[in-house]
Length: 216
Image 1 (cartoon, rainbow, N blue to C red):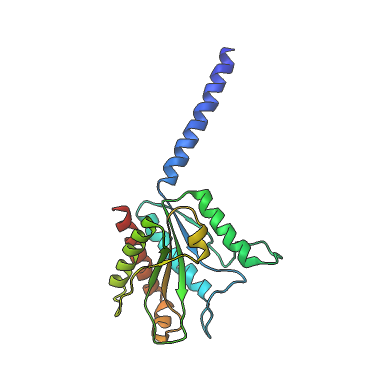
Image 2: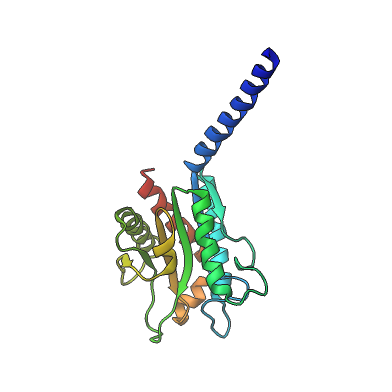
């Protein structure tokens, strides 16, 4: 009986340690979502695919945040979508799986990296979106928007914008921002978005915005 009690106590203690460890990890976890991927290229120009730019910036943001001591969970690290091959509606499954991934990780916050487009090629500059009814989402968006406007030396700074229609914003648990890094339809900005040093500036600006929000 004594041996059984000792074994039971040992198993219980291991479970407690695992739970505590998981809770500590969640308290330092940030999800970085590289938008699109696989069969979904996102915005496409003659020379660029949005999915590729999103992944490059997301990886650099991961590196920055991990350098600040945070644990980063990436929704994708390669040119793949979050869907099963042969699925009739890959886009729907992809978005559902991204939402499920975020829910499983219970992060401090989530940032989804994207690139923008507009019929008028003169339009440019980064913009951050948050769920309109999320007070904390708005605070995070204002921090990231401010850092991007400053670090990227934006000529005509935009304001963070509330939204109720984007699927990730509506369905994801917790705090989530969609970060549109720039306009692929603006020739000048499209050229910048391809440069590694500019991608690093974007990642640093987004990272600093996150740290500002978290009070670091």
